[in-house]
Length: 272
Ligand code: GTP
Ligand code: MG
Image (cartoon, rainbow, N blue to C red; front, side, top):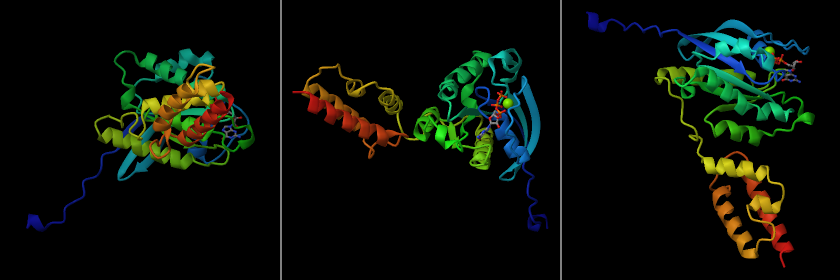
């Protein structure tokens, strides 16, 4: 008799997670959270004092997730308050303002602060990071383009989303992907995909960054000013193999490759 009984579906265990927000002051951390949880936007800047705390429930597949959100203040003044809150975190929302280069350059510093607070036994690899390139509605003031942000995020194995807390663009998609990744990580024994699972190497990512920051065509090809045609061609071939769009899927590789082609043409013209 028992064998014919319909099997009762096991209720999936609920999960409790902790997520934190990180990034410079005024980049829009609180507004992103508010947009998602309260579906509204506040245009007046109300700096977070130390930490704001909230709880929300979300559904991922058949699991109910209870999310504890710790929204951190970005101002350096609040370091002593927020440093208590890095521990036991499953997910980090790392935010910068696409119109403010310093806030993008500061991301490495935020990771360093977290690493330091977690101490030698803390494990950043068991945390899901999502990078929000925020305020994309302010297109006129944008100075960090998508490929630059995406390259930084994906070369570290982080998720990347373009967001606007003002219009709501990208916000639900970002949170959905973020929570799914956290649940995957929890079900996977706490391991997130390794960096560069996105299909490009560190050398490719570093080369694209170097090309973006080069000061002239010599610098771009990595040769000394006054180098010979042979040296220029040799350097060009090496970069072409590394960055050719057929071979390289790193964000920004196509533009970097074009820039290298143009630099080589300009240099060959100038070399007698
Ligand atoms: P701290 O709490 O000081 O660390 O700042 P925060 O990162 O939490 O910034 P907050 O969310 O308070 O937003 C700062 C300012 O940016 C506010 O004036 C917001 O209205 C504005 N802002 C936030 N997100 C966006 C956005 O997507 N677009 C535009 N145009 N403005 C935004
Ligand atoms: Mg805030």
